[in-house]
Amino acid sequence: MSVAGAVRAVTTLRLSEMKQRGEKIAMLTSYDYSTAKIVDAAGVDVILVGDSAANVMAGYETTLPITLDMMIYHARSVVRAVNRALVVVDLPFGTYQGNSKVALDSAVRIMKETEADAVKIEGGEEILESVQRILSAGIPVMGHLGLTPQSIHKFGTYNVRAKEEAEAEKLLHDAHLLDEAGCFGLVLEKIPAALAERVTREVKMPTIGIGAGSGVDGQVLVIHDMLGITNDFSPRFLRRYADLNGIMSDAVSRYVGDVKSRDFPNEKEQY
Image (spheres, rainbow, N blue to C red):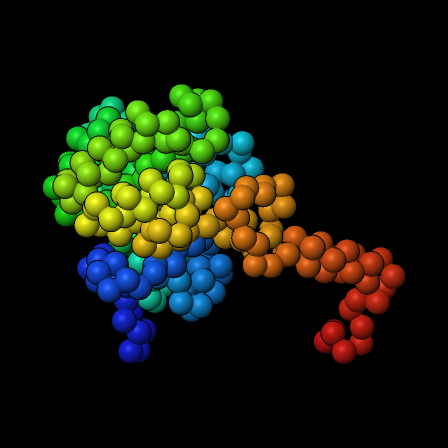
């Protein structure tokens, strides 16, 4: 990733330092060049090229259909725009589960073909071999526990995870395994705030929450949700910082009206 001028790029080491000094980490998703350029310039520390692109970019109901080639396309576009943020790319469903060699091959493709900084992988003990094999190649790995959207058909719901003691204990166990394996960070999605805070205290790696309360080391949201481009998704944890759906709809309607009424283009808008 290029570093313009005096901009100090965010690295996995810097994220660890931020945790140590209590500085919160801001993380957002991006899937295209133009959006990533804005997000990076605004000071976001980590940009996630999430498999949520399946939902917000491609219109799928789940994240499962997105392919490795599609993720590489989105990640390439994002990396070209970024000067400062750490760029993390999701390994999509089917590219790491059950086969650590396939996992390594998938991660290597992402790193070589996109020039991103790291990959993210969902799951704990069941995918630990894949995590270890990717790490052995020198590729930074971010974990993801709690609600893991790629496992939607296993759980059958997007409800809060780890509310029961057994599942909470497994999540703690998995978090420690990922930490000890050498992951540089961990996303905790839609779990009780008290559990997320406990994980954050017990592991060395920074934790990034989404619907996991304020006791984590940082926060992440899907940019289409926080900007109000999508308006059919309103979980408790989501804070909308804009209503771009309304702004864009109004702009397009006015454009259509101006074209239909022959108001656009006017004499000053032609050659």
